[in-house]
Length: 212
Image 1 (cartoon, rainbow, N blue to C red):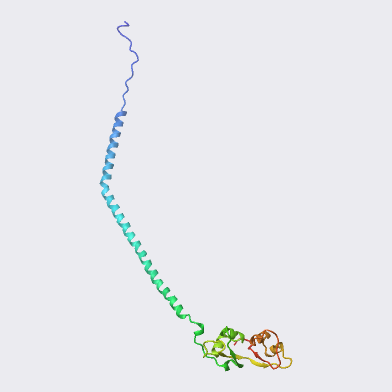
Image 2: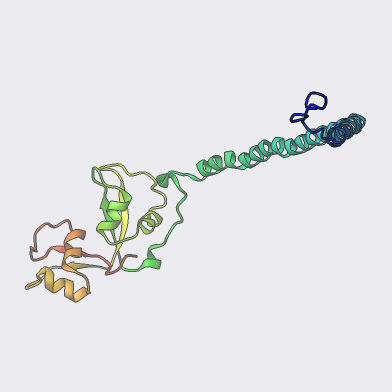
């Protein structure tokens, strides 16, 4: 009995599943989707190329527009530099030698006082002589408008002073200065004195207390 109906040993069960079919179906769908997307991209590429071409043209136009003001800048600079070149010329024309300027004549009566004559010494100028007698340089030149140049030992200038004082008994410089309302130093400078000393009968030039 045992030989006729042998016992079946462990038999592997047969499993039935639909997973391979589903996987294959999904793969087919993916391939079709990729093909569709690729076709759409290829069909749209000409329009994209046209858009890129228009963008390139626009940027080149912008570059040409921005280059225009750059060419205008040098022109404005050259125009501004034209008046600057003329400025030194006008300044040079205005520069005149003070010794050669036209001097307006001044009458002695308009200043007042007494008139004396000064013989020009070596190294003296209008400004130095005017300072000695407490006059303005313009005043001294106006009094001597016909004498534009100074020559040592030759030129004699007309000078206006306040007074001519003859030294008497007890007339020291301090007393004489207080009498005319000027400083002792001004009298010494006008008379070329380096010491506070006077002699009887000496004639002292008394300058104006303020510059005329």
